[in-house]
Image 1 (cartoon, rainbow, N blue to C red):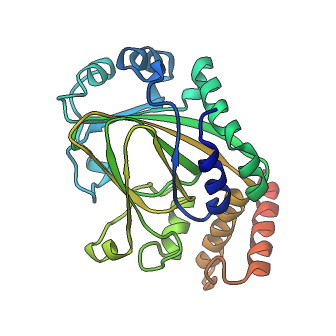
Image 2: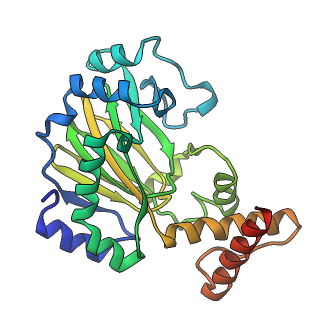
Length: 277
């Protein structure tokens, strides 16, 4: 068992729309020792390891993110003092970590499938961050649970349906190839919920809920388990269709206001996608 019984019950009540803190039992797992993470990094395709300086502002421009000047192995082994941020992507390429990912998601499988149907594109990401490093303001397209393994961090999560933070045009730009990073404004702070994560705690983050992360004063290691569903794919298809309509001079309404219209857009985009193939 990865998640506690109480967490599973609470997750069923909150998923997929609301963030929620869960309890897990991975904080002492040896797969997250730094030496073992070096081994994992060597087994992954090189483009599946992303790293940079962690001394960046919340509004970091992704085009100018500073490098740390170190190798992957040097970054991991000296993470305590080198001021870096790293993510090992798609850890499911490694059989051992794939089994761990499947155990985590299998533990919540009944709750997930009851709410959003079959889960697929199950992926895992391990974040290794120096003390006091920052993950800039951004959004992600998947259902996501971030599991804190070592150290502490505070994640500030913002509502996904607030047009002052995330406009329809921003949704559409993201799904047509835009970067995950977003512009953060001071006035957003009144709408944020801060979640302080310590080892043994996890946070469910709804699809595309904007967030940014501030590490504590020790090295942080976190596991992000993600998956897609018919619901998340439908949400993406609606925004992709809205983008097409907007380029044709139309003004598509906001997603969620008219379910029947949303269903028609999602279906229409699926048809266009098949025709383009």
